[in-house]
Length: 200
Image (cartoon, rainbow, N blue to C red; front, side, top):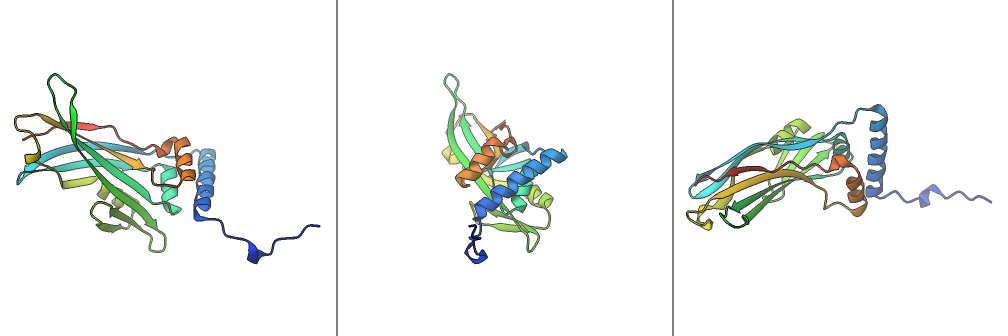
């Protein structure tokens, strides 16, 4: 004899399960409608200048989320966008060496109650609020006066080059989400390295 389970005894699905269902449903509907938008990250320009003995970075990045990334954001998934920078010592007869690395991480979150996009710098703790996703991503893509390395830490009379890239970091998510991201190419958002010589 069939005995229905009382509604009071039903447990709500964990948030991670709800997110997985939402993302899988969205992926299917987008494929059927043919409206899926590809995302991409690109470093448009980057340069450094010495300010009081410290090399600072100015850069412009183009950050475009895919349809799946946008849907995940609006479903409650906080996205981690990071910029990776390397200081490379040029060697004449040997392989160049990475002498310093810097990673700047930002969290991008959508809050449905206030309809605001929140950008938090995980390195400094600074936080800003934006009315649109475009303005939030535009802010993330504008880097100005970011301290990179003290000139005293560099060897005199040596040539250095810098390189910068941006990526969507999915390593901090639970295993089920990471597995989903792995099989969906639009989650592998990463720009090419942008390189230039350090002027001293």
